[in-house]
Image 1: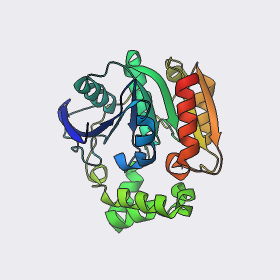
Image 2: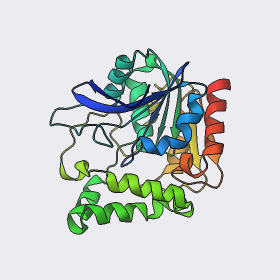
Image 3: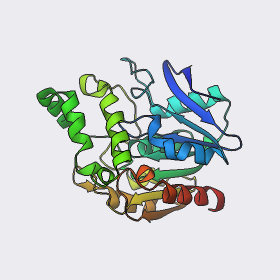
Image 4: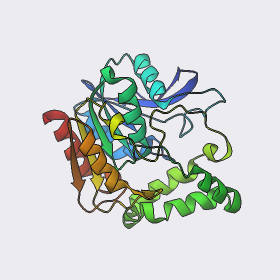
Length: 265
């Protein structure tokens, strides 16, 4: 199957499917699109039916309306549309937050869960980003984001940095100019232990050794420790020599850890 648009849950989602067998869904980070998974999509599809898609408001998917919605329910409806009754789920950065929301809302649909380089929480500093966009313009803001500290380790890889810049600069900026009516279970700066204990799927927590993302005083490595301590059936793996975009910076090692976990854990 090739690229398609699914009209589900009151929106239109761009998706791609490749491979056969058990399903594995890949969920993008903020400001990116399906291209962030280029080094995983073909590799994983040799052994699994891989689904990658653009979240509502990003890439080739439709932007939100004023109606409340949930990214998790969008994914549930996409899976129903594709005839998929259960799946492994992998989310990176903001995609990890969506993946956690999905397993909390629909635990019966998730086999194994991978949370990579993720705060597993909303971007609570969005208002600061909005102010910067209004002050300096969207293009300058996105360029500064690409060249900033969060993506510092990715900047050492020219092809990775080029693709990241392309994705960020093609982002519409909808979330900076509109009130997003998204509904979220995890709405604080970090997920609470009480919420995390409800995640029953075997969970792999991946974190880049050079990861330096900080939000509201929370370091992403500290969040990874909270995840491992409170998700009952979980393990954490630190990926050497990579930062926030670990799947793009060293796809070989990232892919190996994900596939080993899905097969053996």
